[in-house]
Image (cartoon, rainbow, N blue to C red; front, side, top):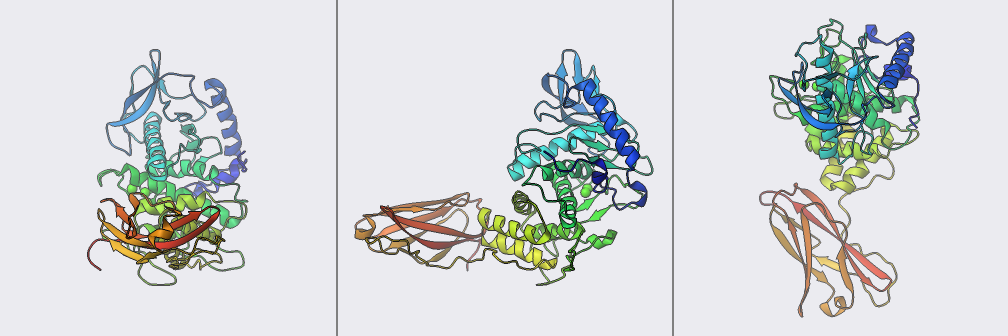
Length: 482
Ligand SMILES: [Ca+2]
Ligand SMILES: [Ca+2]
């Protein structure tokens, strides 16, 4: 059950939160819920049409080019803005039914057309879904194969997620609807956030982290779509295309202070109830302080220069950390969760980058964080009278992508022959084969040509009956010579 049930709470976390004229009123919220109920009654319990065949329709969008391909549905002689391949996703006029017509061609490209707004919503929501699957390994917006309906034409300068659907209004100049890639990705990002981990307790920091999570999901949607500069090109801004209040982007993730947000965490008694610091953390992790062709980003603590690890790795680390969300969620706990995620999913280089980005926004090291490199060799001391500790010689090595290296496993083969040898989970693209002969026991460790560079721990385990011994080996994958 979604823990936040009042629409007013959601209005505070919409993309227009910085505009004083843009707050949704309580009256709007009440009428909205009535209209939604009417729409759901007309169209089915989840707002979707009953069934039909999935098709690829042609859309004339306002933000994403012309033509664009969107997933639609055919039922008899009628087409609808309903995506059976992403169950639950459809789009209609706010307070009305899903758009339907007798051809599978949609929109006129203008900013005033609500059918066009739905073309942009469907396009963006479909990219968002695909990004979740292909970059983050998530099955649908809810994590269980489903999405949520959308409606356009809300008659306020606002957009929101109400716990059951996304709703989109217009900008202050009424020149377009609030349906760009990042705004749609933001609202569906709130849905992903709601369905990640467990209830965050809704404290001030938890709410700030929720808004930032939506900024990150909006930005990921834009980067996944990867439009050329002539359209809505990937950036780390929120709202640059929709121009909500006539003042351009609402958020600059590389320097949140440009629109009145905080760049870094402040260690005050109440913490930081602002989304800016985590937005900034994400930029530093993905891009670093001075990425070529991208805006420079300041730091508040630690080293003055950070290197980014790329947006897809940063996204996975952020996302895996978010799955650990629980009551009392905070900046400090987000740091620990992402550091643990980086250590377990990638390795030391990514973990250290994650730590450095948090430190740079003034969220300091926390108790219990993992460290690197793993000490080597460190045989563990579980009992096993006939099993002495094992070692790997050398304890570390360096290879180029696509190459392999061979190490010796000791003690002598006679001893090793009596025990089973194995490795722990291996990073993607890495193989280990253990070969014994009369003279030695060797492990050949290979990495694929496209293995990401970095430092990877490998655990070797010897087992004899109930007794086990382990030792750790560190492989560095890097181009060039030492
Ligand atoms: Ca853009
Ligand atoms: Ca953007």
